[in-house]
Amino acid sequence: MRIVSGIQPTGNLHLGNYLGAIRNWVRMQDDATAQGGDCLFFLADLHAISMPHVPAELTANTRAMTAALVACGIAPDRSTLFNQARVPAHAELQWLLNGTARLGWLNRMTQFKDKSGKNRESASAALYTYPVLQAADVLLYQATHVPVGEDQKQHLELARDIAQKFNNDYASEEAPVFTLPEPIIPADAARIMSLRDGSAKMSKSDPSDMSRINLTDDADAMMQKVKKAKTDPEPLPSEAAGLEGRAEARNLVGIYATLADVGVDAVLRDFGGRGFGAFKPALGELLVEKLAPINARFVALKDDVAALDAILERGAAKARALAKPTLDATYHVLGLCR
Ligand code: TYM
Image 1 (cartoon, protein in one colour):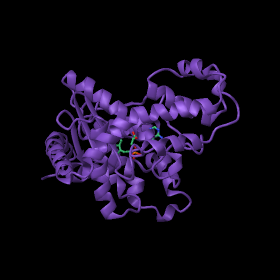
Image 2 (cartoon, helix red, strand yellow):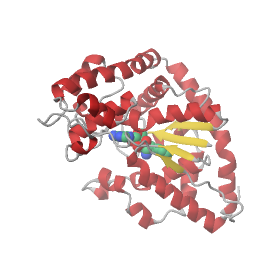
Image 3 (cartoon, rainbow, N blue to C red):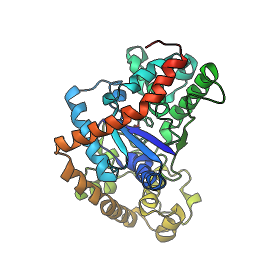
Image 4 (cartoon, rainbow, N blue to C red):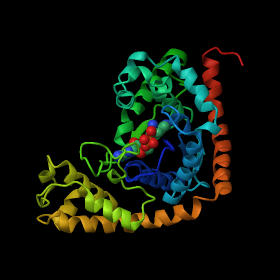
């Protein structure tokens, strides 16, 4: 079992990242390392330059996101934690896989369409080939499982298509170069939505900070954001079916259920028939209870630049060694002399 996943170090870690991905990283780390499997988690700083960015902020965010991941429970002595830029094999493998990825496949990627918007001609080439780098990220390490939120599913399917075509074109069935990775998407928290709009996902790029809970928000800010969250005037239903067509209500109940580690039906057994005036304070308190310890660990770590850089350097050294056999094999089967 080899678990690999990444996160872009742009802005703060928010509740969508945490419930959709990072909480699963920590759980899988704990299970996998107990069974002798290994885990690699990285800051996707090379992906971050696909959009306009401020260099000094990228450096600071890379360290801040490292502190946030450790605060969430990623243990650098059990998992390999690093940033892509320190492991050149990611960029090298991307180039090698560009020969296999098809334009038609990249043209179907919804993230490129969303992020490039109406002004596609001025989008960066990196934004277009972004999914090939993401494929390289996981194929480089022979990842078997990739814990992500729903929005990354299409990119993981592309990684499988690239691996399959590459294996068919350049390797034998008995000795494939790449393992086909399996996306692991949480059942209830696959897509945490904005607090201001139940049809948009919670995202770092939303201009309104009120749309998301950041893991760095203090208790007052969390309570305030939940209080101001968009809802409807109806009381909560007693069964999950009653949330149909009520995107905002469904999102808040889903967040509660995931944080409390119970099903949506259990939440509605307690709150069915009651209004948001009763539900929102309970949700706010639950958020504060679950996130305050993470926040406290984050605050204690975030300014220790030397310790954070040491974690990333140590992780990168391990990652470079783990990447080498697959990178070498890829050059070799392509007939490239080095
Ligand atoms: P990123 O940085 O946008 O998000 C990191 C992780 O958080 C999940 N996520 C969500 N889950 C549920 N609800 C939401 N509202 C929500 N918002 C974000 C994402 O699905 C993701 O799992 N391209 C990736 C980073 C990446 C990567 C990889 C991931 C680069 N290489 C290789 C896996 C494997 C990204 O931008 O995630």
